[in-house]
Structures are given as C-alpha cells and as structure tokens.
Amino acid sequence: MSDEEKNGADIALELGGQKVNVRNVKSLNTILTLVAAGAACFGVYLMMEHQAEAKDAGKSFVGALKEQTIAIQEQTKASREQTCILRFDQKDRQANAEFCKTIAR
Image (cartoon, rainbow, N blue to C red; front, top):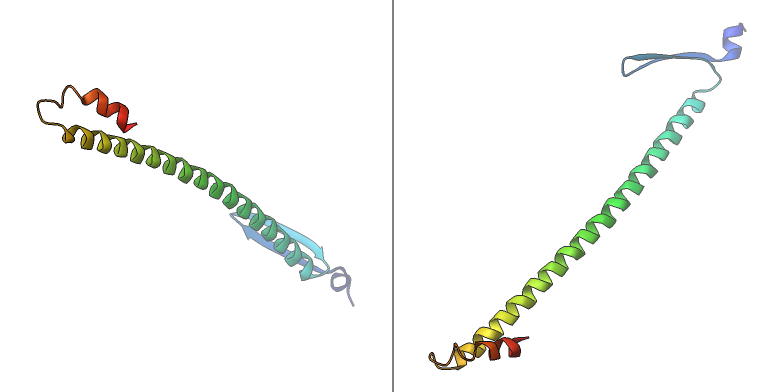
C-alpha cells in the first residue's frame, strides 16, 4: 500500500466562494460527526430563540388583554350611567347627572 492510502483522504470543499482543503482525513465519519454536531448546536440555538420570542408574545398578549378588560369596564360604567340618567324625566336629567356618575362606579 502507498502512503496516501494509509494516511487517509484529501477533501476539497468550496463553501460560499471560499475553498477549503482538508488533508489526511482518516474517516468520512469524522467530518459528518462534526457537521452533525454543528447542526445540533444550531438547532438548540433556534429553539432557545423561539422560546424567548414565545415568552415575549405571551407578555404582549396579556398586556393587550388587560387593556381590553379596562375598556370593557369603562364601557360598562358608561352604560350604567346612561341607564341611570334615562330613568329620570328629561327636565331632571341634568340635575341628577352627578348622582348617576357616583352610582355607576
């Protein structure tokens, strides 16, 4: 056997316009293992980013839900006040407006 066969294979790659030469690789499994490890690290990174974005989205949703709840409460208060005012005759409504505001709270 010649020295080239004992030492392993030479691999020449061109990635993104850059040439990479790897010499004396004993096994192709070594390179595939390194590629798989890199892909696994990248996958873990993506999962952690997704988790952080999901947490932020959840906080935004809760904030929007709180704002909507406050708007509904204000609308209910206005509806109660209007119902109270409409109970009085038209000539007495202006005089009892403050009374209805205090009851509507």
